[in-house]
Length: 190
Image (cartoon, rainbow, N blue to C red):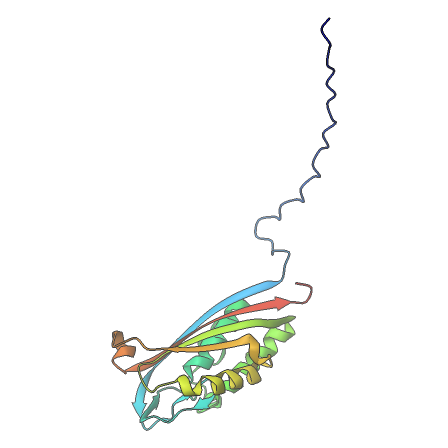
């Protein structure tokens, strides 16, 4: 006699219903924001060279209405972009006499007021300065510290690097200096 096997089917549990998809155009549930900024200025004789709030000895400085600190300006634009606000040139117009010769660290402090007013803090800043000359490596730590101070952020959250373009383009021909920055912001409850 053949034995009959009885198979018992285990009851499969239905998966829990997935949360409803956010409506199109709705803000994401987490409060993380990323921004990217860049700035470039021409080198001119008779100007101070200021990068990341640090005056660096050089035969020429960056042309501009303020101190023309491309590194601080790139970080400002990254912060403003993360908040979805217009760029630094719109916020602080170059023709306004109130900004003539002003330290770019002041601009960073002003933008950080907006960041905090909107409930965000810096997770990290990653910036790079593109310059053929002068050699920037000896000044990197001072730039990082000055930026962190103006941002009110721990120094470990701010990274500054310097690269040469090995003769390529206007920066490589020593006609100017450029900087790029990326920032990540987190809001309360993120």
